[in-house]
Length: 97
Image (cartoon, rainbow, N blue to C red):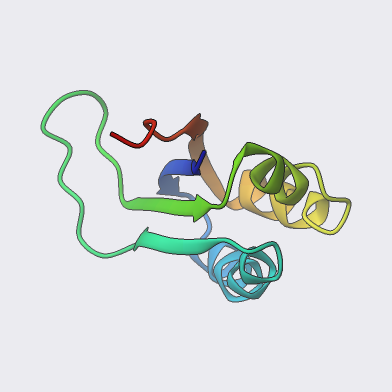
């Protein structure tokens, strides 16, 4: 079953977050992920305002967890956490109808 990483982000250090964005895309692709939503204008109609929204699709939860738990991603996670306030959700997609 398809799995998704959903992220809402408020950037606190644009240079650091820019470096994160530059480096994370190729890593996501290496793990078989692909962006469905990446940046662009976002409007929160309920809840806290956000600046950046991302939705990344993976083949399944094991593929998503392989990316998320990868030692290669750990330094990028630290960079994101140092340069932004994020909410990250890992979720399975709906079963096929």
